Image (cartoon, rainbow, N blue to C red; front, side, top):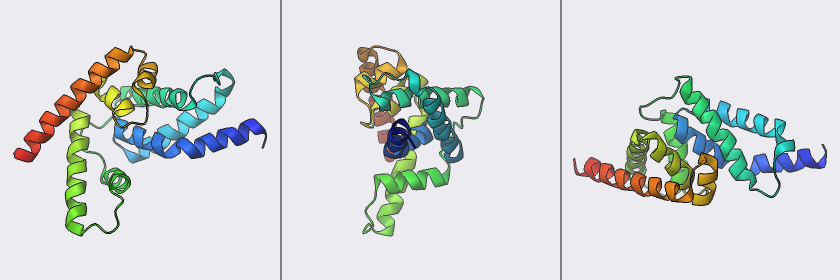
Length: 176
């Protein structure tokens, strides 16, 4: 294995989990997310000669994965309902890793996570894209703007609106 291959392998190892979390939240299906992540890494490897080392690798990789997710959605495979149970369990385990939590607390946490996921899926596409890219803190607003091909102000406004809609929807969900 040469230096480029070793470096790429290390970058894959370092970013595969966060990329998977992003993709599974975007497409809502764990099996499809695995496929998209693999396709994204293959595409990145095939295009590695075009990568500008002065730019962020994760932003470049997220842009590739983002486009793969949009392609997947265009093929009509995007589920608009609740995530698959397995995906929810995996995401919940990452968000709530406390092994000492009581079964009741875990059940409440999983229910809250499912509600959040449902509301994220209901966001209008531009708001959902901005929220999934920058709302979880994995990309900066500037990096999300680069992936989306819009201005920083546009991403900031979309994040503001997404958070407002999510807050309102979740408040109604918990009150009702």
